[in-house]
Length: 119
Length: 425
Image 1 (cartoon, chains in turn purple, yellow):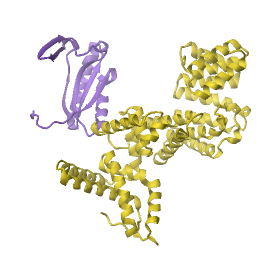
Image 2 (cartoon, helix red, strand yellow):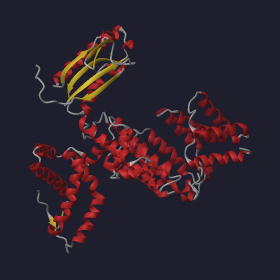
Image 3 (cartoon, rainbow over the protein chains, first blue to last red):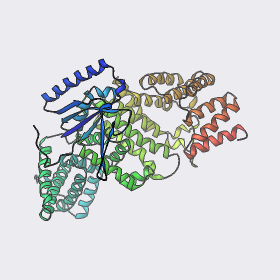
Image 4 (spheres, one colour):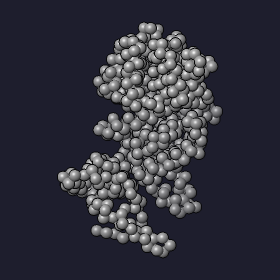
């Protein structure tokens, strides 16, 4: 079953050094997951300052600077994984470096029929 | 259907069979349900299957005699009849055909795993107490699926409404299904943490019953019994030291049930209780559990709290209480599970061992740190020691603070009485 792991941390608590270590660890994690057939996709996101929010209301497009909500912790990256059950997904989430500084939200993916296949 | 060895009943009257079936329902239905949940992978289907199984028993056993292994027979009957029932409904509703096939596959795969049936209840407990579920959901699910309480009984026990509890249970089951919380006994590495969840649920249930017993409705009394029953079940399935410790703690607190409230429902303090009313059978059982838990060297906070309660239980009179041993145990507890409440209770023991002044110093230090400011028992403890030291004004102030914070009627009456005894209110 597929799960999306959303990594929320406070951007301000990372030093440059820690950020680099995080990326290295996360990369290592993706390979470990890949070896077990659990890895689908992962990526860090550029900082929240680069975010743009898009809303369409009454046919009108509203584009604003910034994330959809100003919160203490911001979305910083994600892992898309395939795990047997929630316990396995939790175990993977706990290995993500961001979990030590922030929160990893684990959401089960709703499988829809009729979506295009991507390699 | 598997053919089971049958023992024909002497006079196969339907009435005799019904009595046997009732008895088996009382003693086995929870285990049968736990296995059906694992086989069918769904709480609601399993519950239907349970009813189907017992209905089948009432039909077949008068005719065929009692099976040698009723539990296995019921599991088998429940599983196959539920699939059959789905197939019959699929003839009218084609979308159910797929469901029926899925169910048959799932049940076959799970049955083939050859798991210990004995473990199914343990799996069920761990599933209902999964940390991914909210604590209130864990409690409701455990009481419903493991203990077999009805939604009404659970609602009445927690002073909530049946629709609220029902919704909580429905959402809990939905999360188990959608997020795929597995039916598994956790691995050895995860077990301590997961067991904590289970123990917390059981103790929560116990405390709901415990606090309610000093007052109102009869229904709520049963929660403490239910928690002890759950505790015994857990220890039977998983002889972990802390599980033993928790069971011992609950037994010791329960052993004082009749002694701790007056017929009018007023609180009788430990030091004033008629110890001949203490349930010695429970105390003996608890002592043995504590001994075994401590011998394992892997015990924790519940075991220590049980040992502390055991010090009280071992004293024939209040005056003979071994306060030195109690303080020593609190010292260990303060290391294992430090908290302001532990510090408070330790301070009370220190007061008994060393003197009121020493204990009062410790309590005032806790309050000065800003801890337990809203905990009525902290203020009541300070008030009591001030009272014993003749510091009436301070005692009055603390009793008033405690009264402002206390919510249970018997406790309020107790504090009001103390204030009255001090002089003008």
